[in-house]
Length: 70
Image 1 (tube, one colour):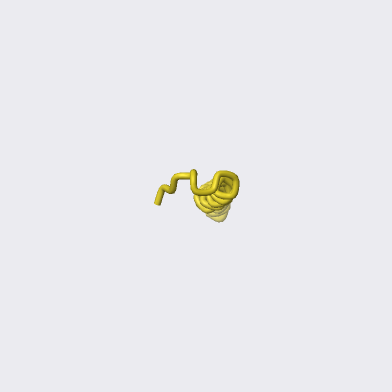
Image 2 (cartoon, helix red, strand yellow):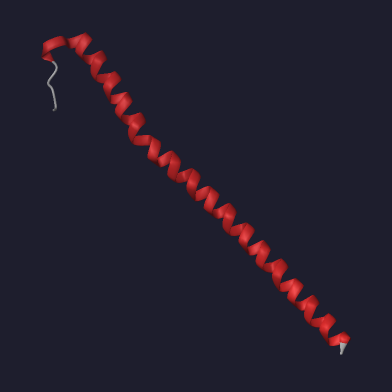
């Protein structure tokens, strides 16, 4: 009987090990998605900064000839 118990424990251990590997893969996937989300989230702020800089340059270059888009 202890032999069957040992087989069940080994099988259970194998399933647990596989589960741990699956969870580790899921964690890596979530880390990649989070990184992508953070990069995407930063883009609008960067774009707004670039547009502001460009607008200032154009205003200094062309002054009142530059149309405003507010």
